[in-house]
Length: 192
Image 1 (cartoon, one colour):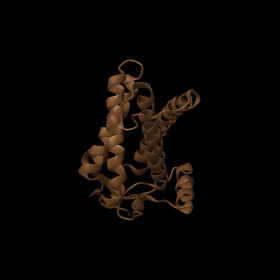
Image 2: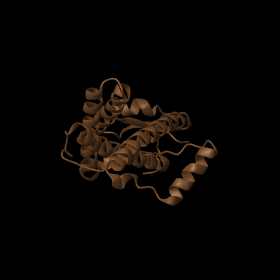
Image 3: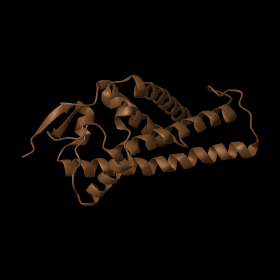
Image 4: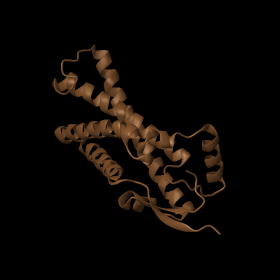
């Protein structure tokens, strides 16, 4: 019989990053079209958080390092087949599909931030890309990229939350609680 216990997985640093990023994203979302300064401020916080996460992905603790959640095609396939069969997969850190989601979220946020910083440089003449000049068509493309990327992120966030709910049920573990406490309920025979 498999036993379960709690293990410290997510450091305070990673949890603060996660919740600050989620909060900043939703504040930025809320401020669209109403409070441009708040939108820009939240976007700037996201930019700083992404820079921190990039550095921490190489220098951080074990489960924060990108090398700890680089799934193979085989583990992704195994995980997907397990989900179809409603079979739980137990990993100390991110599951293979969870790892893909993290990379998708980070890449989308990076594109969103770069396009947003480009827009404030073009339209308000401020920010790290101050002085950027492009054609009208390029500016329209950047604006479209920013908008489309935001739409993609809304879908990814929904899938992310759905995945957390499904994995929490299958694993009989409150994954949202673990992002507050840092401790994850795991079985003894887990995948590392």
